[in-house]
Length: 367
Ligand code: AHG
Ligand code: MN
Ligand code: MN
Image (cartoon, rainbow, N blue to C red; front, side):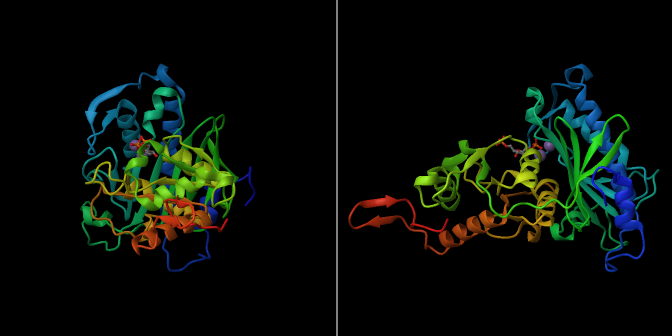
């Protein structure tokens, strides 16, 4: 399909609806229509965000979400847009959102379908006040058993490798929709005058090598040793064991970080830390880590907790959190190795008989 000439609808019809189905094990009937509705929600949100403070949607909603975080008015209104655009179409059985404590079953006045939608309607919402980049993230599962109560939490508690589609919208200078239905990761740019998403970035590939990493460095004292080791080595740059300089970025919006990584490579980390011992990570598995990991893997990158592939993690709670390390393959593999070495006790401070302790860690001269 040609970049710049293929609309989202044409892409989805060609990819999912036209026989012969390339993969007979996956019945994706109705999925393209569902994704068109998700795209409609994203267009509405994009239009709302573009109005900025003139839209009357700024400020706090004076409520807390299920994580105890203050909800902004836009967290609530973007959530409502997702619900309204997607509940009526007869394709969904239930929804889960960062902004709703419980599963949202499709109301009885609408037909029920077989898909499950999990979403973060506004990611990076602290950036709203500074007119910075924000996004929306979504994940689609197909119900396993039509007899199962799809409005139960159990229906959603499945590993990310079972996702049939995932994507995000990034609301930057332009609005883009990046999605995967399991055959690569593809990017569409919103043509505002006409209202179409147009394919502009087909088959995105994340470079395996990178010199860029992203982490909230203010949490450094809470990180585990393997993450501290990795970041220290990046900061040591040309004069350290990596023998080359690295660059750091932090936008405080996972969507914006992942988008950068899909465009030019890099590593994003929100690792396990000891800041809040009860939490396994900062980011939510079902509607942040899983869809982003699906997109990253479909683009040739890797996504791990540090110790396991994110898409294999069995969710235990609707709003459960997970450590996230994702991006360029070679760097993520290195970070996984550092976790392994630490867990096996091989990551010991290095002490030179001649010069005393020279490094926190065993020297590693691989570039
Ligand atoms: P949300 O706005 O949906 O709560 O998510 C924000 C997340 C994620 O997008 C970002 O990477 C991270 O929180 C930012 O965390 P810090 O505030 O620690 O920078
Ligand atoms: Mn988020
Ligand atoms: Mn959010």
